[in-house]
Amino acid sequence: MSILTNQTIEGFVSIDISTHCHPILSNANIQLHNGLKINDLQVCNNSDERFGILEISVSKTKVSNHPTYIEFDIDTSGSMEDIASGIHTKLEFVKKTLDNMYQFIAEHVEAVIYIKVNTFDNQCRTIIPITKITLKNRAEIIAKINDIQSGGCTNIEKAFLQSGKSISEYKTQFPTHKLVYILLTDGNPTAGNIDTDYLKTIKPDACNKCIGYGSDHNAGLLGSCGHYYFINDFENTGKVYGEILHKLLYPALENVEIVVKNGSIYDSVKNSWETSIDGIELHSEQNRTFHVRGNSNTEAILVGTIVGRIDRELEEGEIEEIGNREELYTADVLPDLLDEEDTVCVVDLRKYMYRQKTQELLFESVEYTRQQKTSSSYKNKLKTFFKNMRLYMRENNLMEDPFMKLLCDDIYVCFKTFGKENAEMYVVSRHIGQCNQTPCRANSQKLEDSDEDEDRQIQKQKRKNKWHRLEKMEIEDIVSPSKEEDPDDLDYYKTEVQDDDLYVNESMKHTFRCVSGF
Image: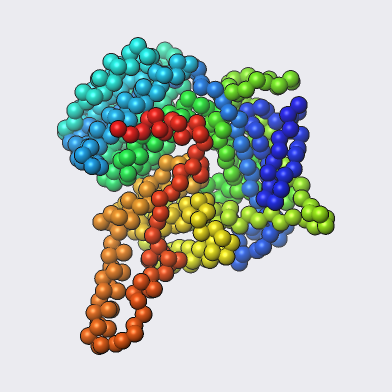
């Protein structure tokens, strides 16, 4: 009989859930905040409910042997020959990533992966017909990828129509195979029918992954046609493809639904509190934290389709049946922990309250952008929230905490892109990464260093003009300009290189390393 040891904020409590929990899960529990209140973090509607978190941990799974078909559409318009970093073009980064990716798949002999690779500009061309990747044909596949050339315009209509037909025919022939469509483009559609509403209606019928490459693509179109990825740092090309590949090779659960009784759960897609959320996918060794509101009687019922094979020996009484949709576990609120004096230990979830507000602000920014609206009150709200969050970090020795630093960068991206043409791609990417707890997100440092960061240049010029005036007035003992640059003010905040380990396990790290780099 297995015992799960659940770590709380202040200690440990062991709960026997082996008779109720499916072995695909290694942990599931609810914790409720009972610590200090913060006036600027009102996340509950009434005094009868408390903010909490539902933590779900997935067991380690084996490489999937379920047949999977991946159709690639690679934009080879003329702009893909632009230098991306150093001496390498955008297309060279893509080709190298695909080379590494197919090499990685071939080495996982248990995996049954079929691919088809198309390129598109004015025309669509099939570079690799439907082929199962093996150790024997990997060199031939890689050679064909390296022969890809670029030139022409961007006709997404032709790509969607051709791949949609191809995927439909494949599905008819192999109805049990998993179907995945991956589109990579670095530009807006410039040939064929370019109407966004029309293009949405002809997208391929599969599990779609749409990758926006650089800052000239249509983020709204790609986001409405599938799971959206934004690459503004071309050296992260391998990370995006690596995340996609890792989830395909090491799946655990699909179509997960979480139903909450005597409480509610935050739906980050709708930005609302609901009694249930669904459509969640979980992969091997993944940890997810969902935000809930409730009381000591709150429960979360987990239901999902099992698609992963557990990478350990099953214990007596455990049963593993792939493909079944079933109730996996009912997570309850963890009991209070008592100290030596029988006083209830504090469960301080303020970090997650700040994450909750960050997700709400990211969503709000996306809505303003899509409606093409601006709001000075929204930017002021960001500045106030940021300053309060930084004060909390300083008072609680969290200035170097990766979790909190990531929230700071998310708010910074909202602030710096608000009202600009690139806002949707940046903020949608950060919103997806934060809500789904994934490592692939827009690089905030690239934003800070780019020419688009006009606000910083304006502030520098204002300071320069001020000090010129003071020099002419021959005022002595003036305060150093650097002291005006308050790091807790969004106008002067500087991002740092983020440690992606926050949402990456060792197996995913290995995939990233194998798929990335020259």
